[in-house]
Length: 400
Ligand SMILES: [Zn+2]
Image 1 (cartoon, rainbow, N blue to C red):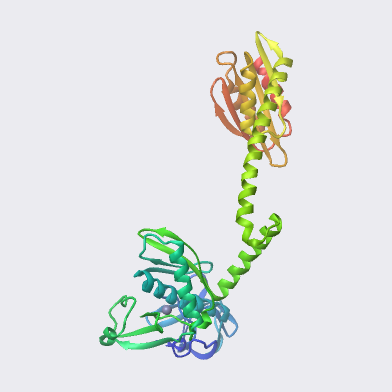
Image 2: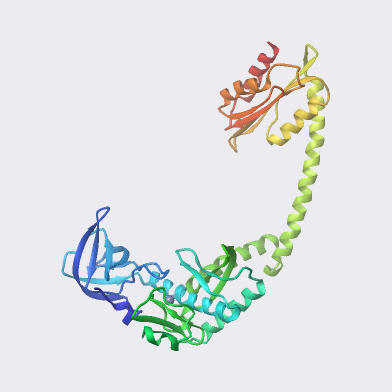
């Protein structure tokens, strides 16, 4: 059994201990067991501590039958070691985890929900609560109550209670298993539940609690939140984004959404205008391509490389040409910058050779993919600097 120093003092960052066992682990790693440790092993939704034993990095910590195993890549030399926690990591876990007690307690108190899930990861903290819907008003009320509990700087206490005594406590949830003694963690007036993790001593240390969003999750609602240092990082990020948008749109931050909506609607009308201008341009281009094309056995042979057109614009152009009369249309477009090329072969149905077969052959030269039928085929791939030559070869096949 390893003595758990983090229960006596959750703020202990350094300690001396005796090595009681060193076990070989997979991947040339070692598991160091000590007589006492301040390293919290993974458990109760809280990730394990990291840190150093005699300067050797501890990459993971887990509990195995009462022994706390510190995973290291190098075997410590002496019988005694000096342990030091990565305190930034541990304190972050203490802030998020203690915040979780408050958010869960507040949700239970305001909406009668139960907490049915908790996750504390490197980039996300959430709880799952028994709610099917959460309104903005409810979120705001829960956030306000949670922060009021922080501002009140309430004591966060832990105590070991005999199972028979539990009835005296107003517990948010029952212990997961039957134990003779249970460790209860209480945030005065907010939350009381069995918990074996590490917490701050008073709620003020949690810092700001911000609910970032929620989503439906299998009959429950997943509530995402951040506390303390993570809330500060989140505020820095969102305020930097807001400032940037405000500068670019030349409006105060609070007017950004309205200004953005105006820009988006302006963009949509410009797009519509651009689209109709392109269609108009295609009508003229189709007319001149058709009028100037060579004629072969009553068919116009229209061959053109159209720079920087989209596949949709190429299709539109082909349809416009075919609408003018019997024709074979061999079109290509592409952009060296975007490393893309696109081919479209079409003809008046039944008028000429198989367009699908012709395209397949052309795509072998450009290294792309595509397909179609006898009178309409298209495809593309990466940029090809000899699109004109590819079309000329296809034209030769059609003429033959
Ligand atoms: Zn806890």
